[in-house]
Image 1 (cartoon, rainbow, N blue to C red):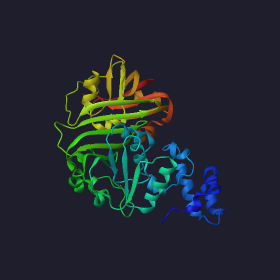
Image 2: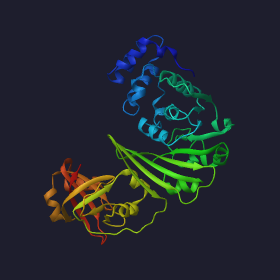
Image 3: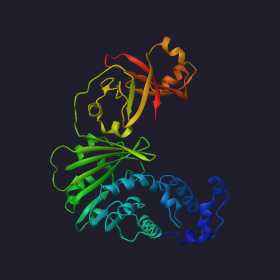
Image 4: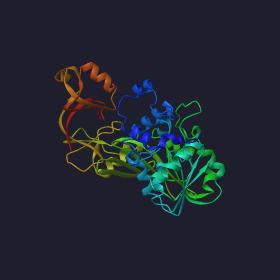
Length: 390
């Protein structure tokens, strides 16, 4: 299926950009353009709306052609695409799962010659068209099975395997994704010095390490405290030592970073709550570097599995910081003061969920109070009331 050229006329493009009413209203009314089927028009409007915040450059560029929303689901955001581009260098790069082309376009800012492989002919044509609109000229587009088409050497190969089955069910294990990287890893490494692999944020790091080989480093990339992707740097030659793990949490005008090593099992010191409470960002929690954080920042854990930290000293910390106002045992007497109140509730190593706590004590979401329900090293269950420090 080729691009529908009638969607790219000035009149239709203006309509797509300016239509701001409910999609269902347009679906009922039908297409105002005889040459444009209503489903195609709805798809362009819906997909464009979907990427407004995720891909602002594409959103603000004229005559961008959008694929179905399902094809945008796995697409990198501009923030995460820029992150990947920071860590590549060389003359040639092959993106063997090119898709909509966001990562490819950012790689093209750093790499002299980039090849975009995509098995879906229409998606390949869409990426080619959009590259022209974005004034990117150093990308070659090839359609077909990228694994079979790999012939020459590249300084870097990038892969973001599809995480949908033929029946559109979601998968995340590497062996279930397409292409199957573990089964084709040796073939890929025969054509590059470095494979940069993007995987689902829910993939367990230890499981990934079991399926792969020659992993030199792993990036855990979060945006606004939500883990978006795991990046695996895989070298043709086996690296020396254990893989490094780097965490990145991008927020407005800043990025918090942390570095550790796979299987960093340093023992942390424990303490009851002191003057300040620290909660690591989502990228650090995903990395599993719980003890390394305590040791690197010279702070104390509340308990082995609580993953909350405390200190008498206020420090810069890659996560949220709170001044501890009060520490209470978790019992009916203490919780009476919060009945029918408003509070921001968090749990760590606690037998009840946030929803259960809210329902049980009739606590509404929001307000000025921050309540942490957790367990101390002696298994005492407590509630920590904190005041956020910006």
